[in-house]
Image (cartoon, rainbow, N blue to C red; front, side, top):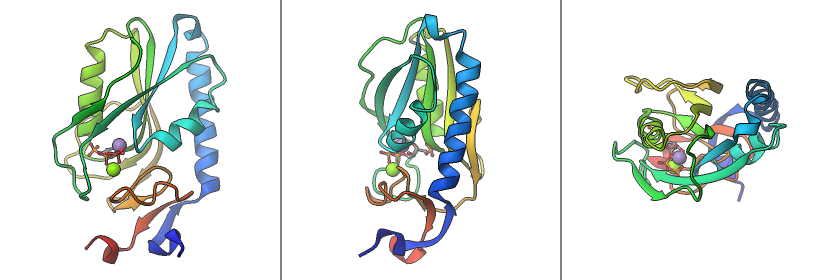
Length: 183
Ligand code: PRP
Ligand code: MN
Ligand code: MG
């Protein structure tokens, strides 16, 4: 069986993703060069952003901490439930540090809205978002993303960390799932 057979079509190839992630890393390296002494923390939003953050971190040529937070709003469905839960909190304090949230996708925006609010309360020196994908979702919450990899259509997409019912995260490209898989 081949996981990629479940894709209707590919949106972003492994190569396109790698190039874009390198460009994001380069931009962050430039923007944060004078902030490294104060401390930079790259926060991975588990589980979807794990692969993205692993690749992004290696494209940022500055010393930084990597920390992980698990939140979930989707469960096994294809639509956001609107309720964001913290399943795992950060291991270290972010007070006085420059926080960059690495997220795989901005969809309804509820996850990031919740995260930014909850992390701002911990008094970081600054907080920015780096999202690989921004979906063209109607009524998306207003989330300020300084770094965006790609804009993508309002389809159910998987791969490169993004799942459907916990599958497809390990697909190397990003693609649109065949409707018969989830309907
Ligand atoms: C997905 C995705 C984002 C979030 C985006 O996570 O990884 O974190 O939803 O959706 P939103 O903008 O509508 O909030 P999910 O809740 O499925 O958990 P996961 O990362 O473990 O797959
Ligand atoms: Mn997620
Ligand atoms: Mg998910």
